Image 1 (tube, rainbow, N blue to C red):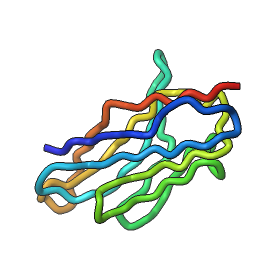
Image 2: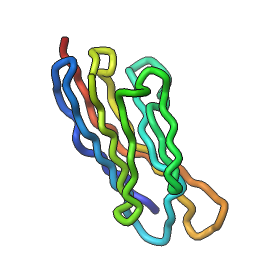
Image 3: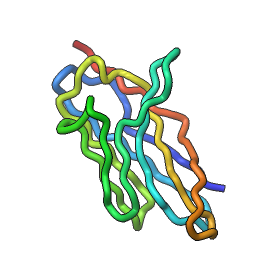
Length: 121
């Protein structure tokens, strides 16, 4: 079993920055990828940014050039540096960890509880 814990959300003014952190913990697993999704109540959860253990990154079009994802493999921790924040970035941000639990080539997804990001205009 893997636990995923986020931190770093909060309230910021438009144009400001925030950094989210997320750590995966447990026993006997390897990170395949980690990333961030966001969800407004009543809407589907959407991918914001993702990074593989090899360092390949993916971003949604709405955040490209403003958000930057990084992964510390030694700490099983993913970061999301959010800059030039806009009111429409207000959302609950969920961390996702895709791991193999001792079975090479497998992937199981674990989710954090979510952290609120609010951008005021």
